[in-house]
Structures are given as structure tokens and as C-alpha cells.
Amino acid sequence: MKEIHASLNQLDKVVEYLEDTLPSSAIVFLRGDLAAGKTTLTQAIAKAKGIEGEVTSPTFSLQQCYMGTDSNLFHYDLYRLEHEEFMQLGLFEDFEKEGWHMVEWGSDELKTFLEAVGYSIFMVNIEVDKNSRIYKIGT
Ligand SMILES: Nc1ncnc2c1ncn2[C@@H]1O[C@H](COP(=O)(O)OP(=O)(O)O)[C@@H](O)[C@H]1O
Ligand SMILES: [Mg+2]
Image 1 (tube, rainbow, N blue to C red):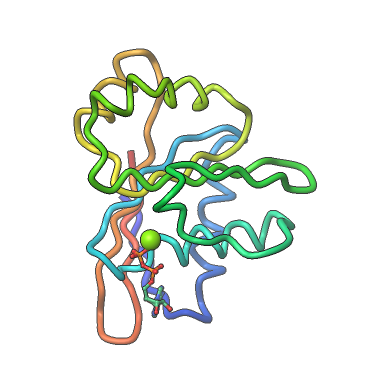
Image 2: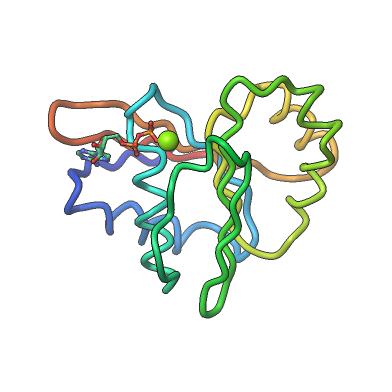
């Protein structure tokens, strides 16, 4: 478990650690309360990957895909989506696509399912600490 303390203008530290640690295809569950900084971290990753335009919260679309210069970035917001609904939508098939898959509000059930079919899930737990955040990163 790696712990990184970062304010908004230090997010590069977190992005660089992820770049050094994660394979070119990875599923990352972002955990933390509302307004912890899950979407913000995804935006910082998009910027580092050379993805143009803004990464918005995908709450109303479940998934957004961004094409980068050398890699793709997928962003999911599964808030209030039941595991059964997720499975029925067939969204899990997209995890096979090359790139990083950043998942907000991924359930324990989904994690268990993905691990059972052979994926490794990286966890990023974000805790609020005044004007900065503590990022706990592990599997
Ligand atoms: N590392 C950080 N340090 C300080 N503030 C942050 C940090 N990361 C995010 N924030 C702020 O927290 C707020 C909520 O961020 P957001 O990414 O929308 O949260 P979430 O997606 O977890 O609901 C935003 O105002 C954002 O600027
Ligand atoms: Mg968000």
C-alpha cells in the first residue's frame, strides 16, 4: 500500500506513481466520499495522457471514453447502479479494451466478479485532509 499526500497542484505525484506502477491496461477503482476528488484525479490522468478537452463527471452516461495520443482512458461513474443492472448492460465487456479504466463507485460485488474472471483491480482510496488529499494506492 502506497500513501501519497497531495494538494490540487501536486496531483502529478499521484499520476506519476500510477504511470510507474500500472500496466498499460488496468482497472482502477476510485474510492472516497462525494467530493473526495475521484473525478479530479481522472482529469489529471487525462491531461497527462495528452487527452484534449474536458473530462466531465459521467454520472448521466455511466461511461465515457477518451482517446489519448498513445492510450485510451475510460471513466465510469456507477453511483446508485445495481450490480445486476451493470451486468445486464454488458458494460463489463468494455474492461477488455486497451487502456486505463477509472471506476467511481464500483461495488465490492463488481470487484469480486472482475477478480473471479481474472482481472487485477487497483484500488485508490482518497481521504480528505483539509485542503489536500491522502491517496492510498494498492491492489
Ligand atoms: N488533491 C486535492 N487537493 C485539494 N482539493 C482537491 C483535490 N482533489 C480534488 N479536490 C477538490 O475536491 C472537490 C471535489 O472533487 P471531485 O473530483 O469532483 O470529487 P468526486 O469525484 O470524488 O465527487 C473539487 O472542488 C476539487 O477541486
Ligand atoms: Mg465524481
